[in-house]
View 1 (cartoon, one colour):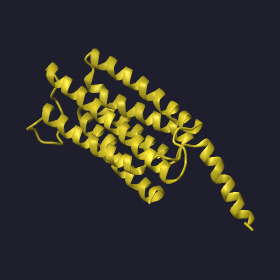
View 2 (cartoon, helix red, strand yellow):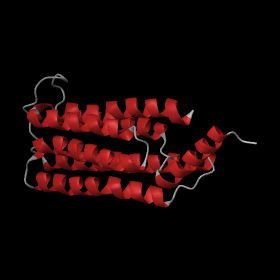
View 3 (tube, one colour):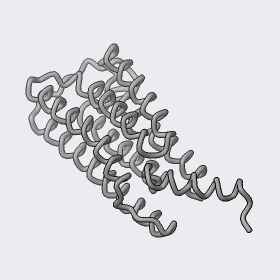
View 4 (tube, one colour):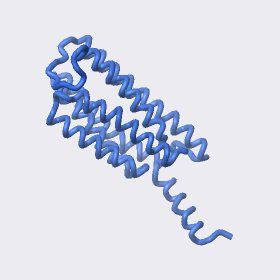
Length: 204
């Protein structure tokens, strides 16, 4: 016969599975960070090479070809990250014998996508008007808001990553010459750190 505390733990676990999307994979965060680091390295090469890596940036993107490369690279990083997140979450849900596509996962995706889509459209508007120096802060801020919003329907730890992205976005807005560095820290380094922590906490 089960003890009362065991029954309460099982009930709590069932309630969490029904209201929260718990199939997120920490490894997908690590890989997303690696994709972003590779993309940032390519962007640095196209924009700044061979200047020193940490000086204040006074270069401007003037060639349409360079801008197109940056947009394609950003889209590729996003697509790879989304696919990796879906594939590893699918594998985790199979391992834990749980469904991936539930009402909880739908709420999570909706909460995540609304700020992301709005931020993406806003960033495209900035690019079309030539305000490229504000794109890095904008993407970091909207991504942070998306994570904080989605944390209500998934692992609560996500909100801490969101707070860090917001902080970096605000810092980047005041120091736009370091936009590529803050973007790399936010989408690359922080993802690797967060994903590693989530992997050792939930996935092992």
